[in-house]
Length: 365
Image (cartoon, rainbow, N blue to C red; front, side):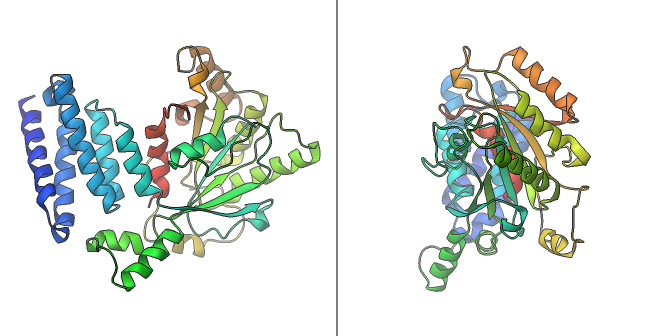
């Protein structure tokens, strides 16, 4: 406890250094400050850092303040390490922290196109995160919550309203605007490392809102086309990084969910998830050099089950039976339940944002 308290004191001092740092010194201070906080959090119990509600709130404010500084320069690795540190000492991030993350990681979003076949997909040059599930399971609401937007994805009361793969490009046009502004000498210039992140486009990714399956009021022939297209996409799309499978948390996996699980469990479509920052400088070169045709091995894809609408359950969480039913469905369809995370969410009260961003960070390279 004494060592943890000393580390925490050191971390507090480093936060003070950030407050007075000049932009050119900021990058130099980042590794030491965040690493100190992370080590303090790893070695401390919550009582070593705060002993009452007031002290807890003060530490939350310190972490959030530093998170805002990192987000300002979009230094994502350190930003997420700081978020991990908060969890290690039991400091639950508040709405301000999540708004900071969403604003930094999702600066702008633009609808690119609707795809109805593999031939109509955009070029596979940047990472993708896809949302799939039964009709009316809450995909659009969840996408809007994660991106901190009110109407990015259209929300409809009519099941089956989404009838194509809707592609949104995240942080695409913003990079171009910033380059243009910098070339004209406008605005403040971030430190070199942050400037590189902004200008090389490595924080761009596609967000894919897929058609719902289930009781959508569409012809059987169209539903079959959707299913075949989905399977091809799961199997062959090289830049797919994260697949969120949304399931109604009031009921658990139903027949249509099992159909999706069977597709995902077939032929080794997905690897077990490893939530970390995916990719690197050589990723795109590796993809360009790959042989054409399906690639079913060594894919860095996280398959995550997302239980939605938990604000509509009696206790605000999924019941034990729902969790068991979903795990059993995964096992029946070739997916190892131990390797598939289940995240409980509510778009209404924003439950689950933290856990979902831990996987979305795989797209923030």
